[in-house]
Length: 367
Image (cartoon, rainbow, N blue to C red; front, side, top):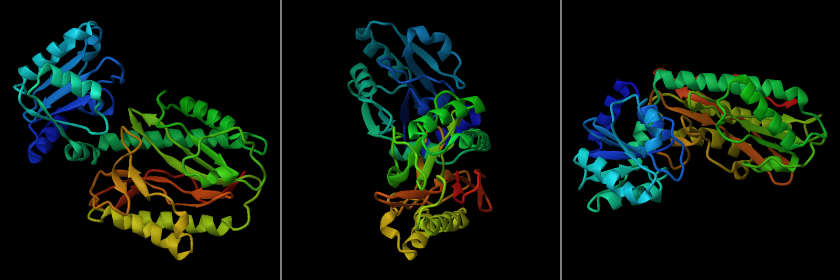
């Protein structure tokens, strides 16, 4: 993490009156230190104070990797013997004067394994929810993060274009999903994709999060493809909708409605607008066309090192949009037993409005 990013995080901690926070292996640790540790049975825990002092608890055999931290950290490696781990954790906390501190953790990322270890090492330690501080750390992206997302979008778009010529009646959803994964990797995505692609045809396209199956595509199927790449840790998350051989009755109007909802919502985005108003802009278009009950999910969600994060573009979100916020706009209409349409773009809030990072055609393409 560049030192200016560390300064920003520490300033946010002081604003929230957070004395210290802990981050475990995964995206939180990667953002704060640049270290890429995966969740496993061996915990890796960063401790960070509001003054910018840091300690890192990690497996002894990962010393060389831990030394690559982009911020200064005191190293506290532990041996294979798990009985010795609490002692090492206690030493790390004590080194930062945190033995009796209130330590903020991410309620969605930190596991019982790490929490129990920290408390075992220092019984007077208090673990508190860091929901707000972790939200504010990640909710606004800098230019480097947005550029990485642009690249992830471009990789994903290239991969889809390489996949489309292979889609035809008789192909299964799983076959196309597998081919899309191969093309994502060939186009330059990191091996850990944003998420497993959704390829849903015919009646399955009425399920927003359908898993690709063995059903063969048939003429007249609507086909939803929801996919993304990862570049420098940052993800893209795109959806386009197609038709196999021909567009079935009624879906031309549905596609036009979803496209209008997408365009209307994106057109509203700028600093100062409430996230719930962006959701309403899309929802009102779909409701006016008589499909309100068929829009089954929120209009969008933040993307970054995680495929789902703040800001959430929903009816209940009071988040005020600001420069650097990066999220999806993905209205959809789903008809049970028949199919669905979703059009998902990735956008970044700029000082003057919005930049749409995705550029693939949004109309229904007949394959």
